[in-house]
Length: 147
Image 1 (cartoon, helix red, strand yellow):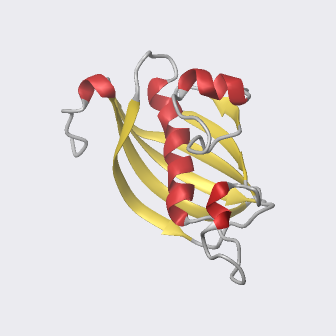
Image 2: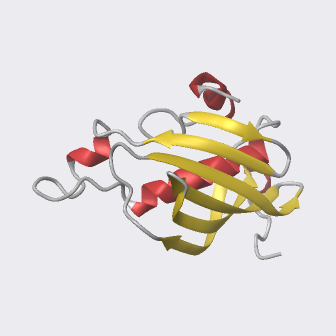
């Protein structure tokens, strides 16, 4: 398990772009992370401003999913991982303040500098989003993610 400082040791992102609060599980094939959705996040100041509902944008859910998958690629390296592909993204229900996203990334394909992962996001055991994401390391940006 990694707390926020352990996450910051791996991912170079900082507030407000760091979307993960805790890593619950990690091995070579899977990472499970948490993201607590709180009303005081900057996005809620402008997204569907009152009187509309406070809803976490799908792009930010996808970003949290990609950051979870990044652990599969860069946690044991001194490099950056870049999102280069998103396939089969589906959003099933809104995510609102008070929700806790549980994000699970599983390896579909791995090459030296590339990882393709199936990522799911759930709230209280209910699927809210899923996608397949592809990431490459900084030194291998010329890798063709379609291979």
